[in-house]
Length: 238
Image (cartoon, rainbow, N blue to C red):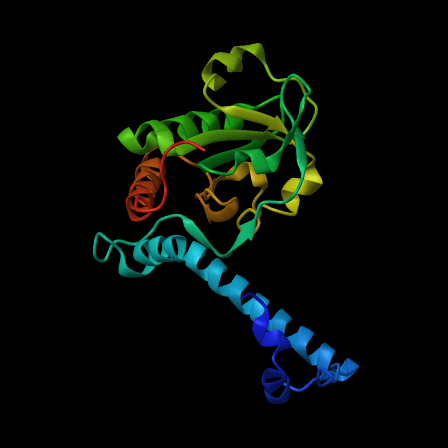
């Protein structure tokens, strides 16, 4: 019969009534809490560092391959390597229609950057020509490169230039932002060079001043080696 054991006197002797035992554990002191938080913070930072290194590994490997291993044994890069690379500033620019654009929107592609005022003198037009040619000569890899003209003033851009800029990005940006990011060779001006930005927004190469056909041919080979070295982690499109 259900419950019969509970009414059996013998069972009561075997399981006498007794108060429940309660154990109270001591709470950690303030110093222990602080130490535990510090350990968790250090562990969290270590995990973030490891994750960052994992993410950066392909990029570091491609730079190492290009500048140290040198795929075409003994070939010297012609352009200036920027060490360490310089991060893209967190800044706003404006397109030719006056709309605000974040510089960060340019990330995700290799960028060949020209700098000049809107009036675009003969030197500027020559830079834009070689900028276009350097991209076009990369063949199937050209889709991994974007042309960018950063206009450093408010001067209007000639309508005659627009057809050649149809596939380029043209943005007006404050001169102080440019000077805090890109740097010309000693004694030169920003407008003297083309600048290469990697897909993460780092300025990592400065092309020689006074670009001509001979210099452009050497820079083209720099770009070819860099495109080849970065192929394992970089693809066309953002």
